[in-house]
Length: 350
Image (cartoon, rainbow, N blue to C red; front, side, top):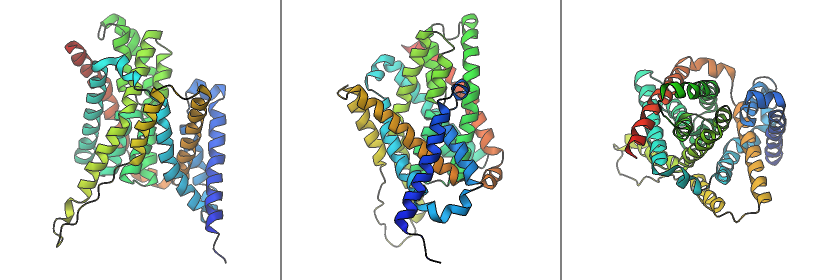
């Protein structure tokens, strides 16, 4: 039997991920999906996993290269285009307090996730890093971006995404309740403060928006701005992670006869992410162009997530056990309690 033409395999695989993305995007616009706050990325992952565990094994030889292209290259393109969702002006709106709160929450959450995951729960480094990044920054998007640095396999990424989706969804119900209790407890006092707490500790941008809609307008605005600033920290986080990860990988090479200089891998897409955010901050692009880029970004990320789902097998997720879920639960509890303490202490300084 002749081997499939490589070009045809790439095109067919891309077509498969595009088809799944089209279904996910269409379903995400339905009233049921919007009421359930099911994003296109979440739906693409679920549909991809369904196809990946049923039909895909039979057609993998004819589609693999295209699916791999979607999972790697299109993912990086999607992270770059995500810069069109950010402006530098958002930094000034939350001030130095908001920046410091986001930075402390990000660093402490990721540090704890890695230490608890690897030392206490005995999880592998990559799973701990992925769950830590998803909890610390912006949920599924951060996990997908981090995967490009640590090169984790699809099962680990799917497990990490699943845990973040579970607790991020739970947060959409918990935070509005905390907002109501806030009036009685006087914990964070004003609407802006509670908004900063929400934006600095909830997982995903969409989840922050959904929770904010159940609060007042001032709280929602503050939450979204703080969250977008936290998202913007994804780029420097990826650069730092890349430097640390490369040094960690080469620690065991000291016994070689000669020390070859280690080539540090800087994630180019993180730097382009910052560049596009800078362009977006100048407001020089026509509205139609900006809206097109945002729609394209949704599609590209949906295709990348669909490819991830196709490469994920249920057996691998079952083998991961309850430890990843437990780590995500511990980080969720830390974000709620520890995040509130960080917000309180830092705001007391300003």
